[in-house]
Image (cartoon, rainbow, N blue to C red):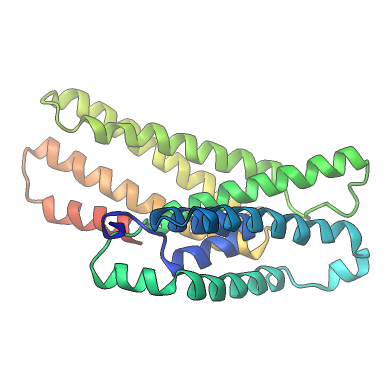
Length: 255
């Protein structure tokens, strides 16, 4: 039964589309279709996401520079996000509505944002690869330090993976070990916050990426607060922070 499975909400898909383009939307919609047993539609979603992304970003190679320069950064993402929103509403809207009414689980916006970031990295890599092969970088110059952005996001997700491993060790009675590992996780999340703050300051950072970075910054703050409260609870040997810890955990999962 699909009620027992997690879905990506329409809101999460829209936000991720704005960040990561049609490719990201295709990935999320594919998962939703797989959850309801529609494998053909799942395959089509991913295929259309890839094709749409190629068509949109290849247009920058074709259009003259003076036209590209006149197009506001947020216009194209806004257009394809609206289109994806309508497609999701038409093809998955009823299923998602019923799932919500039945108190079904949804993936968090943080997870969706991560897919959006990875999708954008893939797009940037593809653009620069094509530009390098063609020997024409003039039309593909994004106007911001894409390499710094990519390196920062990769480090962010590597830190996240390492830091969350401690959550699998909470059944141990070794308080000293837990304390040590949680402290390491806090350091990693503070590093992540610093990474995001540096990316936000990149000159000419596209609007969609700026919005994405603000979400990841908030996510980092929640992780820091979550781990610090857990550490405080361990050090004081009390469960009086349990409700706060649970509320922050729920916010991380549901937002």
